[in-house]
Length: 130
Image 1 (cartoon, rainbow, N blue to C red):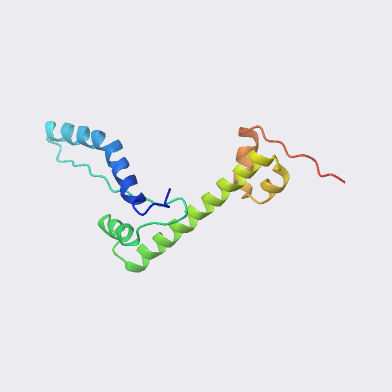
Image 2 (image 1 turned 135 degrees about the vertical axis):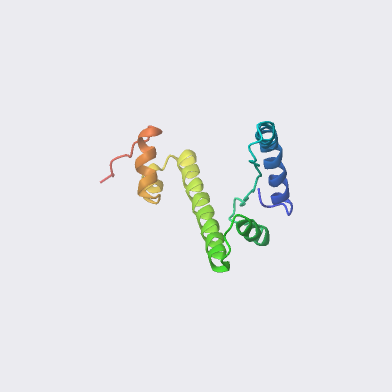
């Protein structure tokens, strides 16, 4: 979670450890085949509460070719908004699981999420009580 000050560094290391062997393997094959291809990794880490390291995030966008400052800032803002939105949805699903108040909770979720997941997770709305 992003309650610790070093949460981003820990996640960065986890991602590097996870994908490092794959990147090494691809680069090894590329070198062996003289393809000239080189693979690298650029991580974008966002905390569960929408937090991110702004300078790191913006610098990494720039390294991928997003040169316009306003565009980078717009991407950063949208990323935080989407992360918070997903966190909100997770909390609502958690409320369903804890309290079985499916009627109330599902009314507050985005329609596309409800429609996709009602059948998938075999959820059924109770008819309204009169």
